[in-house]
Structure formats: structure tokens, C-alpha cells
Image 1 (cartoon, rainbow, N blue to C red):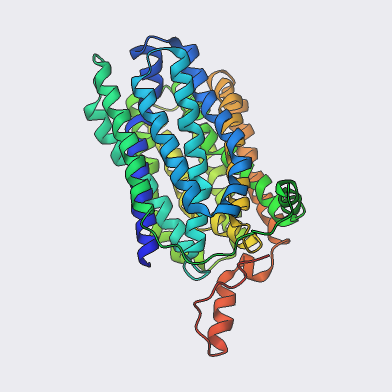
Image 2 (cartoon, rainbow, N blue to C red):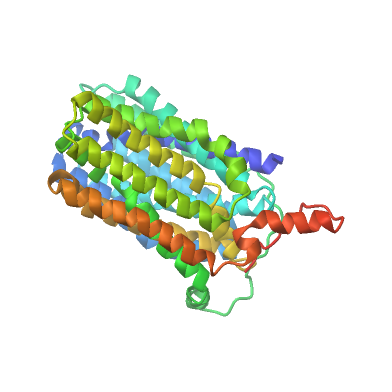
Length: 424
């Protein structure tokens, strides 16, 4: 990695570390510590999603015109203000306003960071760069949550304020770190027609492979990430009789598998067709849902149900480790020159939609319709495999197997350092 990429990764790890301090305790803080009730706490989570859906369509165009670095710094400052505001807010109005700032800032960070990684990498290093980002995000979240759990005190509001202040400080520290990054000269769409935001979205929608990838991405996030802390946890408690401590163990198992397996699977993933890797993830997650079905519907012992439920989260983690070096680089390779920010923002928008709809659908099903819940999401997982195979037919050889392009360069006697097939 070059100096720019190292700083991006360090900053990314710091922001994830800060998020880990507050994410597990947000509901308790709003509902109980501030005494605003479960309704307001639920609204805060909804505001996060709504803020992201509002800002992301504009974020892509801003990244294309201004570059990812200034957009990222603006998003980080906004998120820091929102985090500190949450820690100090005492009324429902103040809490919701702060949540909107934090949610909007966090949402814009994703495509801005992804575009910086694209600009600072080549086709030869991109998969490893995104795998490293995902690894550090999960490590930062896990360590932050662990330390935050020891700092928080449910008898003192000030302990929660401290957590939000640490989160705000981490955002500002990331802003300071990335401000020192010297970005390579990347293509910009400076002379696009006025009002061309519509034109760039039209161009994106005309890219059939990208549209299919967005559909696939929606199903991925809906069937997995959108269920972690809503439907699947409700199902585990209600159907499988999982204790809250076992639920925490399951979430920890997910993180541990990602951290341990990320680079172990990377060499294998890099040599396979991307579409086949995604299809394999669908099959792995289908097995995970089948194991979850056994945990809740198998009528085994409590110990067996707990072991099966923990295994479900571990299998999801294995699939996530396979996706991180696959999907994000594919988004970059499908983007025309200068439009990586637009494509990253569009994919982030799809992700936010899935994360907003997933809990709304899965939460009530997981709590009360146990059998239909498992069957529904098992079918969705198999659908991932079908969609991935169909997507593979739309991709060029270099987009689906970027290492083939590198091999061709080496075979001709050239250096395999330039991006190959990075534009569509």
C-alpha cells in the first residue's frame, strides 16, 4: 500500500472504532437514559435511514464534481456535530435533529471513502484494499464496542455523553488524517451539461450490468445485514430461546470469523469469477438460514439451539468476508471514467434502502412467524445465487475475472500495474 492508502485505512479504522462506542447503546440511551421512550428511539433509527436516503443522491454528484476528499471532510464534520449533539440533547426534537446530522454524515462517508480507495488503487490491488477496509471496520467496531461496554454506566447520563464525545472526536481525527492524503489525479466530469445530475443517473440506469448489480445488492443487504439486529435476533430470542448473552456471543462470532477469515479467503476469491463468488455466498447463507431453522424449530436442547444460532452468525461472517473484496471493486470496475463517486453513491443508496426495509419486514416476522421467516430468507439467499449467475452473463471477462487481464499484460512482457477493465 502507498502512503495515501495507509492513511485512508487508518482513518477508516478510527471512525469504525468511534462508531463502536455508541451503536450498541443508542436505543437504551434515547429510550431510557433520556426518558424519551421506545417510540422516540425507534424514530431515531428511522431518521438515520431517511437522512441517508435524502443525501446520497446528491453525494454522488458532489464527489464527481469536487472529488471525494472535500466531500468526505464535510461529511465527517457534519457527523461529528451530530454525534456530539446526540450526547448533549435532552429533548426529542434535539435528539432527532442530531440523529439526522449523524445519519447523513455517516451515509456520505461510505461512497466518499470507497471512491478514495478506487482512486488510490489499481485493478491489481483493489480487491485487497477493500478487503482491508472491511477487516478494519469490523475490528474497529468490535474493539470500540468492547471498550464502550466497560465505560458505559446505565445510572449516569454523563457516561453516555462521554461515548458520543469519543465518537465525535474519532470523526474529527479521521478528517485530520485524510486531509493530509495526497490524492492521485483522477478523472473528473467537470464539463458535464448543466443540470446533468439527471443525465448521469440516466447513464447509470442505462448500464444494465450496474442495474443488475444494484438489484443483487439490495437482496444481499435485505437478506443478511438487514436482519442481524432485528428479525434474526428476535427470532433467536422468541423461537430458539436464546439468551441475551448468547445473542452477544453470536454477534461476536460473526466479527471473529470476519477478522480471522478475511485474508484467508482473499487469495481464493481473487482467482475466481466474481459472479461465482457471490453465487457461492448465496448458498452459504442458505445453509446459515437452514441452521437457524434448526435452532428455532428443531426442538433440540437449549445448548444445541444456542450452538446452531451462533453458527448461523459465523456462516454469515464467512459470506461477508468473501463479498468485501468482490462487490465493491466490481462497482468501481463498472463505472465509466470519472463517475466512480456516482456509482458508489448509487450502490450505497441501494444498501440504505435494504437496511431500512429489511428490519421493518423481518422484525415482525422473526418475532411471531418463525417458520415462514426462515423459509422466506432461505429463498432470498438462493435468489442471490440465481441473480449472481445472471449478472455474470452481463460482465466482460475482465470485469468478472480481473486477474485474467493482469495475466495478459504479464504474458505480453508488460508490468501488471495499471488498472485493467476498470472502466465499462
